[in-house]
Image (cartoon, rainbow over all chains, first blue to last red; front, side, top):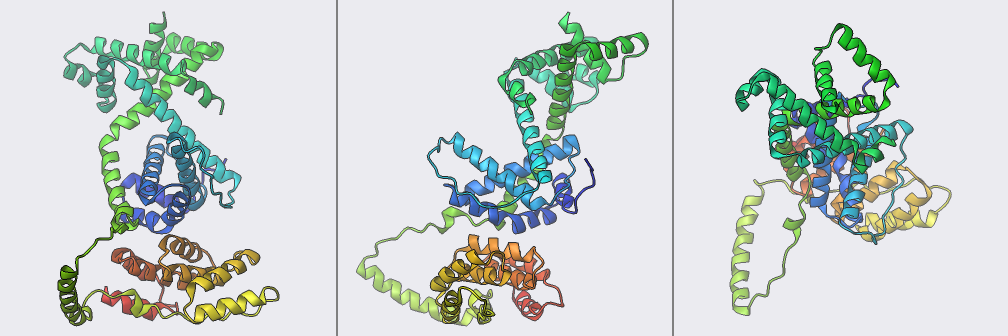
Length: 193
Length: 246
């Protein structure tokens, strides 16, 4: 697959740089279609605002961690992500009887692929985060410090333990977390993709 | 046994394996599927959580920006919900006096105050080139639109847009009807679509998007749109005039 960025990649860069001027264009140009969709499907504009914000934060994380490159127009990609997020939200709220208003936005295979990439990225991050919360307090503390401060020497100093012990503990905690993820249903669902 | 695995994973990711240790690690990755799977998970977790925790502050700052933009550009539901109040007759009289004073003051102030939608909302008459089918709808739509009967015009234009898909002119006038009927969401969707396209109505749609922002009293957004109307556009002069008042 070619990794040539689309001109709309400026929006991804704006997320990375917290560039409010360019980000305002996203709200100006693309939000109304999403608001309209949410409103037609049992939501209000506050819901739409949340959906838009959470979607943008997810894209930010994907760009930060995975150097996500947007290779298709932002409009359809973003709209589809927001739309599916809203449908998920409705499911969560137990609104199963709602008739979903469908619109006829056509999307290309490439757009579909980018949307899926972002969704899988998010599901994976959420899985890791939720399993992280299942760890004991000591492991969470140690891992959090480790990830924030890259040097293990410093981590050992802060926690008042030896370097060797900190290293050993870190891989033990990571091992526990690996096991939790590996044995979860969600992981097996994700693997199916 | 297992614990040693994880220590090796950590060493490998830190580039601390070499020689025979490295060779044997890579050998096991290739031959032992379970070992490989665990390594992949370990690596993915490390990458995900590192990025998450490292960027906690940045994420907060971004959320801040987005919340601000959200409340600037997205009209909030709660503020538009107004409750009717019962006013007693005596209060009503007082209110009338107050209102007429306010009206007088308003009359003097308004000329210098913020521009209002109605100052700028004279629409070009709808004159659709006669198309073969649906003549009746065309005539009805034109009559209704040109006599400011926007509800009927919208009905007829909707019929027309179903038979002739993606006609920018019909869509644009539908948008104007929505705007006149204060259905901002639908209006903005249409204006965004056309101004982002490549029909002959790109600039007209931008102008109407600005008017919609003006009517919704989102002045900053209105300015932003106006500033992007190029000098070559028919709407340039109007846009500049409105910009000066904002």
